[in-house]
Image (cartoon, rainbow, N blue to C red; front, side, top):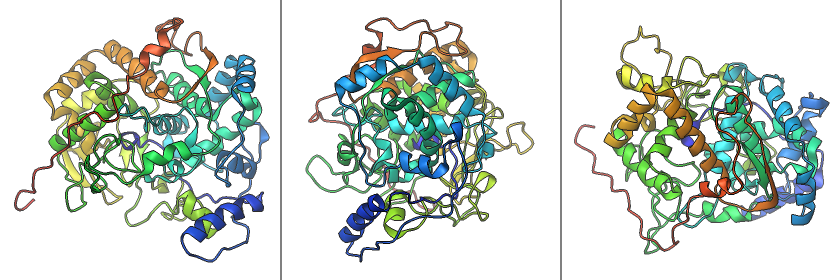
Length: 484
């Protein structure tokens, strides 16, 4: 989700342990591009161990199948394996991982906690769901395949998937990739004191990313005319193909550049999130609640994160190998190109995001990554290191959204309940579920606050998909005023 750029990037390369797999994908991509096939092995000198002593190279190959397809169990086999899955053991292994630290991808970029990174992973895996036609969602675990894994908004989420690969290896068929990605985000929120409803397991994985191809198509208007990327309308869920939801700098103008205008961004947000089936309270709770954690990464301008997986596999380069500061890790991370945390306690759940929106005067400026972002006008404020995106500022430039911001700033309990509901809706929408679905009894650190899910409770969170032919409002961007 562009609105939840809380992950980190790293200088990491794909290591080849299965040259036939790599050569197959390289050949396919290069042949399509009209380039000669390079039969050599892809890779950089990556060494080290991850959780349970799993070799980094093995984890990378498991997390990003170079063939762009993977073996998955059938319905019956998965149901039997899921029935044996030890949820408590998965909880513990994920919780332990949050504050572990591995040289492959150090957690110091996110305040010595992988939790914010995994929140972003869960959000970005789930975010492509669109209520317009029911496509997308994290069920299927297609984020590990093309096209989603190479979307600009998913930069370096390969690192998060690699960090989780040892847990997948440990539990095998009983723990699907779709469950692992969303469980990691939910357990991360719970471990940082945040509210979720009991997490449920049972998302069935896909063997490839073909179901995401429809999400990757260039957007068109109802008459079939190609639209500028950034001005997509329904049935596309996001405004920009390759991003989750909206452009954080503001809606894309006819010249292809963002309009740094919070009032226009509010229109963009309402349109895009509405296609997903979310109402105003869910929208504001998700944006502000998600931004209670972590930061955005844009340590320097004119330095990209490196090649996306599709390009890297074809050209023998390294997947998203950062070029800022030499290694692209930690303080040198570049992902979205924005830089800074939203709050002073990025690994602790609270409502300070909303308080800061109301208590501070914010002004736009160019961040170190070269993008427009917002800082406090008072440069001696206790929040002087905090940032806001134009899409954050939009929440106080829409009267309905602002009312929600004011409510959440005053009442933590209301925010807790709204976020828990919206997070479950986000992470459970779309896809195929096993009949052996099973849930946490009580989320960790929740003390029973949100209780146990009833036998039909989970189904109520699915947005009702609109007809694929339903007429949806389009975003009309006013012309640039002179001198702006």
